[in-house]
Image (cartoon, rainbow, N blue to C red):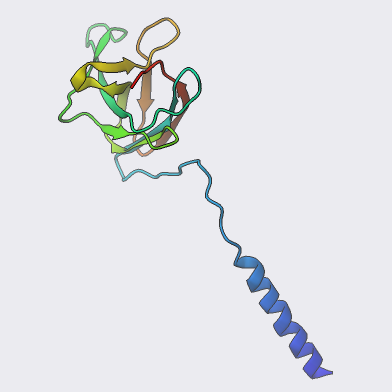
Length: 147
């Protein structure tokens, strides 16, 4: 009788380990953690026909506000130093370990003057606030960009 109980316990343990060994399924949702003092901005860009923008350069232009009138400001894109990335085959992108701040997203190749500034419905540039030590997912953006 004791031998049967021992075999039952061993089989139960083996079945539990087998159940725990399931293959993990990776989703398309990125989970990124920035370094201390930095931030992550991620999302996905599609064209107006909802096709992913593939291998498209993206840049973040930093927003600077007027000290005397905080509602006014400008955004600056420095090709040499502004954060940049490229979309993947599904249009996903991530700017990893960027300086916290406010940014405007520039889609396309600024060096050959083929780019789009992501805008609000009123036509003004869309500004994203990227706080320190946070990952901000800006979601799905439809951008009228032609490669």
